[in-house]
Image (cartoon, rainbow, N blue to C red; front, side):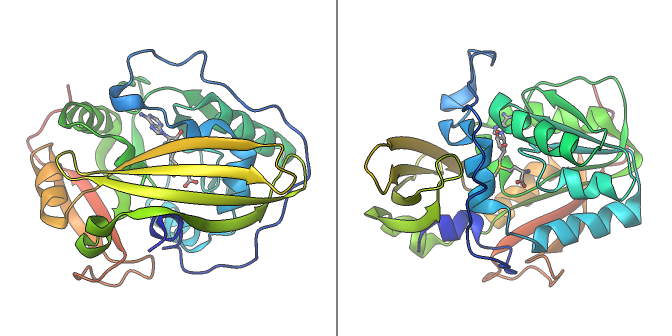
Length: 294
Ligand SMILES: C[S@@+](CC[C@H](N)C(=O)[O-])C[C@H]1O[C@@H](n2cnc3c(N)ncnc32)[C@H](O)[C@@H]1O
């Protein structure tokens, strides 16, 4: 199965084919980021917010899901790894107070540009999810669209969960969603193949993404190489995307031993119960009683 499908297609309501936004913006860069990020983060894949949106902004099922949760739980809300604000922005439009944090300057540049266009006042903060201290609590915290899979090591995950506990209000809710890994697909890997055709948002030209996938069994990391090329041959770019895989029982153990109780677990954004063949693991969590944040 295509990794694009694996990573990006589980929001099943595809509404429109990819269209170029046609606007020109300089690519962001990672100059201001911490130097010692674990295992090669941040992925260079997240250096162009407009390209990210060209690939992903037609996805809606998770947006609806998180908006429903926000309406049910209320604010203030924190989205961790908010990217270009694909979910943050429609959430803020409902009038609730939302803060978005992300490690990528380029993704946040695009988020800010879109929020300004909508005249929304959203607080965007560039920071690493494994080490942030905002000095306030949130009723609802979420980390959408497989973003947890960018935290590759146990140390990163422990530090991340500790930060979430520190920011979660009493009786607050934390929701995350990740892929439910398919062992058959993982073990096969993929040689370089054509994964997607799209319109390049900067030039308006047809573009192609090819990908090759290698699953690192020992580290449970899917290493995906993307080859991005324009039809005129002028751009040929290679990106690497690292996605840690979480197996269902492992994920439940991780959250439990990091101070969370499971309130609900869904297998897709229609809230169907999680089963072996579910595309997603959507965990609705509360801080475990008796666990104090640091
Ligand atoms: C799949 S995108 C999700 C973006 C957005 N939540 C959405 O649903 O479209 C993953 C995001 O995680 C961010 N990210 C990766 N590692 C991070 C880290 N250590 N701390 C904060 N953000 C991180 C990337 O910059 C990227 O914006």
